[in-house]
Length: 282
Image 1 (tube, rainbow, N blue to C red):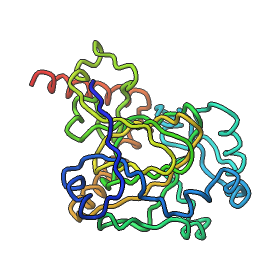
Image 2 (cartoon, rainbow, N blue to C red):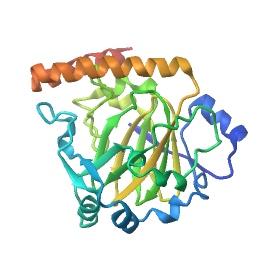
Image 3 (cartoon, one colour):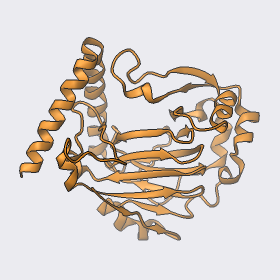
Image 4 (tube, one colour):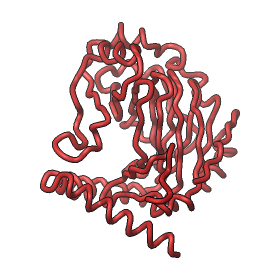
């Protein structure tokens, strides 16, 4: 497995960003959110004092395990209590894809949609919180949007793979997930990983990572931190494909998990291995 550093750039506009968008090359903007009030205002104390009463869904590493906990929140907590838990030390607890702006619409005044490209989807700004040491399993976003991941507090290590690497990274069928160990790849058990090439970066507060449509991403919270993601999709065809995948993947995968539990996970794993073996032979 070969990983190269993602480049950092500043001062980009829609014209200079266009080649990266067209070629689907991930980059880090160092100044895309420099003028956002959120960059300075959204401290842990701010969220605790101003919005600490909100009930938020909290997830652990049980999220991807087969059975009753599959893709289900572990519990609900007050945002204040959740942040204090994350501040207290390493934990696997996370909150993701949470649209806090539906509950606190005034927060929308603290950020702006970039004018770096067309097609931003105003209705889906999401926040992600995680404790030091928590990890996000390798996956791609099912709706096939481009993602602009804006880091507000703390740092994250992010590893990306292009869609062309899908067979080599053992994607589980009917899902957008892979469960290979990015940090300790087992080449004997997963030989196709030897062919994999990707990108990595340590995302710092104030920086924005452009994750092109369909790119796989693995995330480690090296500190307690949080970010806001903005989504853009300039292609109606790609939007339609995303909606189709949302419908089919959730129906098939969640339905079969309820019926078969761990056996369904084993079946998906075997299918992923078969596909990767075929890729190795090519």
